[in-house]
Length: 176
Image (cartoon, rainbow, N blue to C red; front, side, top):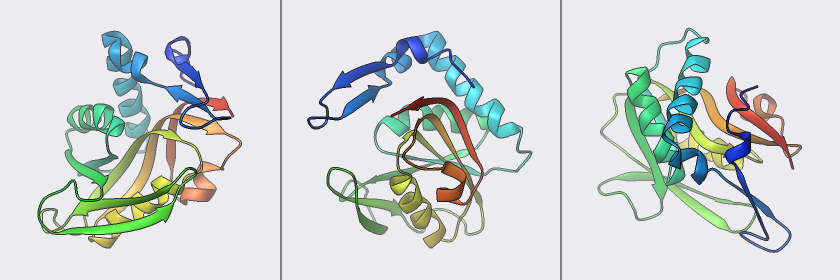
């Protein structure tokens, strides 16, 4: 397991609501060596799969920090999955219940050739709910999700490969 980021992760109590401890990865992104090493570690883990990739998709907004860099490092295109009403043109959307609220995610349609392989990246895996719905959107527009990549998994909330039913790369795991 990749532990280089452990000392940089901030634990913020009672955010976003009382009783929750938020794991803040902003210090990981702010440190240029840590950011570079994290992106490279994610890329190296994916390359072990020996699977062709056409796109990295990631979720707004923290996911874009590493997702774009990961796409560049892997020589892939980049797909934005955003919150409702943040993307222009035609979109597909899915709404679902999250831990603290209802969320709607959207993806643009008509710009990605069908049948291409997508690696879905998100910064943190907690329950797998957001990643599952993002994967649904990717598949709905005719792309193929080949697996998932996360910097951090808060363990105890889900079994990633059982929940997501695809291979997962996780750099760092921390108990909830």
